[in-house]
Structure formats: C-alpha cells, structure tokens
Length: 152
Image 1 (cartoon, rainbow, N blue to C red):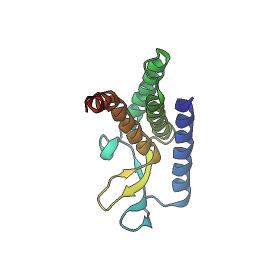
Image 2 (tube, rainbow, N blue to C red):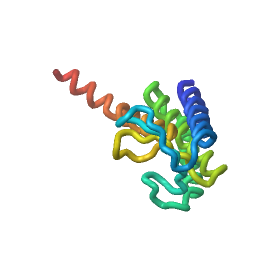
Image 3 (cartoon, one colour):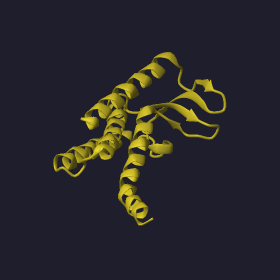
Image 4 (spheres, rainbow, N blue to C red):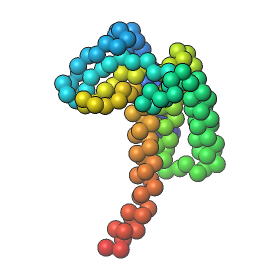
C-alpha cells in the first residue's frame, strides 16, 4: 500500500508543481525563494540529467516505462517487500512516471528547482528519484549495520 500511495502522491505533486511553473513563469525566469539556498528557474530539458543528450528525451520515456515495468515485475515476484523498499520503489516509480509524462506530452521535462548557488536545475520527480535511491542504499546497509551493532 505504501508503494501505491507514494507513487501517486509523487506524480500528483510533480505534475502540479510543473503546471504551476509553466503557467506562472516565463522560460528562463528566476524567482528567489530563499536567498542563497533555493530559487525557481524555469527551464525545459529535452535531454537527461545535467542537460546531457539534448533532443533524445523520448528515448528516456521508453527507459522510464521499462524501469517502472521492472519494479512492478519484481514487486509481483515478492522481491521488493518491506516498508523501506515499498517507499523506495514508490519514490522511484513516481519520479520516473512524472518525468515520463512530461517527455511524452511536451517532449521535454520542466525543471525549476535550484539549490545553492551552483546547483543543477531539478524538479520534484528528480527529488523523488534521489529519495528512492537513498532509501535503497539504506535498505542495503540495514542488515550489515545490524550485524555490526550486534557484535558490539
């Protein structure tokens, strides 16, 4: 259940935020939210992370679909169980779907979040993917850390 709730919430939040940016900002416009820490800069990325592979975004939509299909496949096999993996895969699937929606409809992804003075431009789907990846690492480290703690 955690998986579906997180996936749906990520998709809704991501698409709502991107709609808000596209509706209320001009391409290239920057709005300071928290000086030195967070700004919104409206950018359209037709490539991948760090603006690499510009113009090949449609292929990343295919990769996203295959990635999410893989998550569903391994969930059905029972290999992605437990609250941490449920949450992790929810964030990963929601983020992948959120960006895939942009790629299919707009042929590019709307980015707008800039953290710090030298940060790249992200969106909520990207943050969800990062959160999901971090939770996978937590899951992978959980058992080894338990063994270390038991030895002490």
